Amino acid sequence: MRPIALAVVAMLALAVLTVTAMSQSQTGDTAYEKKSYNYAEWAKGRFSEVVTVRNAGKIIYLGGVGAEDENTAQGGIIRHHGDFGAQCRYAWDKIKRLLAKHGATVDNIDKVVTYMTDVRDFAEAGKCQTEAFGSAIQPAGTVVVVSALVWPGMLLEVDVTASAPK
Picture 1 (spheres, rainbow, N blue to C red):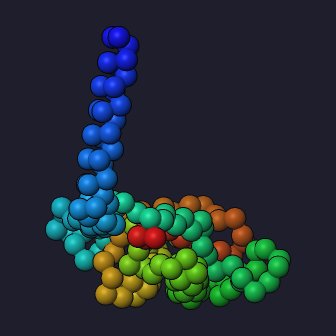
Picture 2 (cartoon, rainbow, N blue to C red):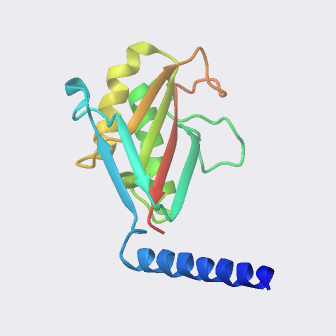
Picture 3 (cartoon, one colour):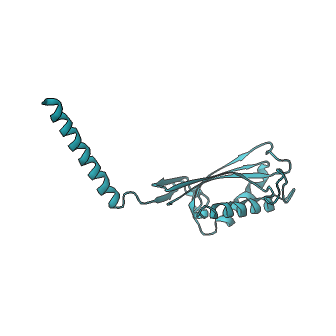
């Protein structure tokens, strides 16, 4: 008799947990929510120090977007040789188009990692990214200066992580 009583109690406990979980999901606790935070005064308006995302329906990873010509089957054809600003604007235009294919915009970007070959282009990279975001809140971000990127003539590459409600 005792094993049957334990089984009944276990089933009742499972039923209570299931009903509680279902009632929480109906009260909006599962809504997509993204928040940006800045704790240092100098970072405000430049980038978010912390971005939290709750209940993302979709995470979007864009890997290493640069000034590669996307209209050719041959890899490594770089547009705007020697012009960092033009390569940066082209990369951000491509990022926007890739996000749009997945129902997202720059507002959905949570984190950006920019790889660049010359630290002297840092200010131009910031200006370019700020223009790309327009009035959207800047995400968390990192800039890394490297000795070279995979394709000759490539001056920057941008990794993007975004999230969307569905």
